[in-house]
Image 1 (spheres, rainbow, N blue to C red):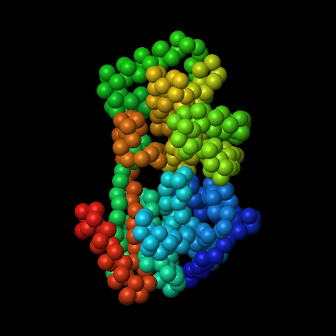
Image 2: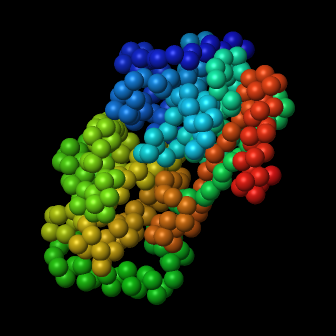
Image 3: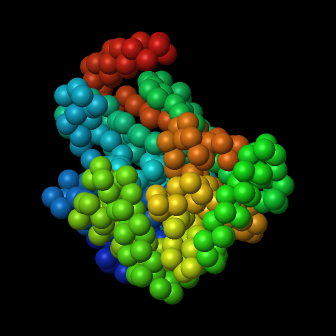
Length: 366
């Protein structure tokens, strides 16, 4: 087996060869993660990391890229001043799984942990947020830590809605919702149709992408997110990321745009990333002037067509746990966790062990 080369420095993804390697890795990743693919992560770094604090950790074997993870040296852990190494996530990044070539999961974790041990700096531990737990990738991490007698702590576990079924959309809906609820939704559809022509527009190409993006940002800004200042358009860097990422995803056939329109005007919109065998519901918005018709829910009924996509086995809602709308419609759940891992020598690991015990005790997990 060839030795693995490691790099913990800035890596120019604008280099054509590096870009091809990154894209190839994403295509054959053990756990798909569109948020770490080049077309999303690169504009995210440019928009949200102007001081270049984030490093792209990459591992190669025989010139082939087998693993990549954005890492930062964080000074605080929650509200505590505890320096640590962390996978880099921003508020619009909903999965923290590194891109790792299928079959190389254990080798990747061994290399990453060895690098963190050798040069931890001031970091007391490694923290991996938003890690999918039901994956080969997570299994390999736990197995690697067990083999190395290395402490790993699952400090938070949650489950979010997931769509994964062999049922046809109509059968899935009948199974997920009681008849009374389905009847109410049909009534709302009929009432909405009384106001004009209702249509569902589904696109997975790049035609009209910039106009669609503008319409989405405008629709979201008119709602509660706009009033609270959390809309994408309210933050320049986030708006730049949204525009850049969606345009690139559309150009690559990795974006599905779904719109519910009334007389041609969008009243609910959904952007989903396609990263086979999974899909990811990235952002949704609806017109609150039509709230009595539940346009967001009506759009999700149309989104059940994801079940018919031949290359998609499951869809991650990317929603918060116990989301009042999607949890009632999607029956499956995806476990997501925050993991903290010991690094460095004996003294550093002893400190981490005490910190982990305190946190797990506070959470009632000790």
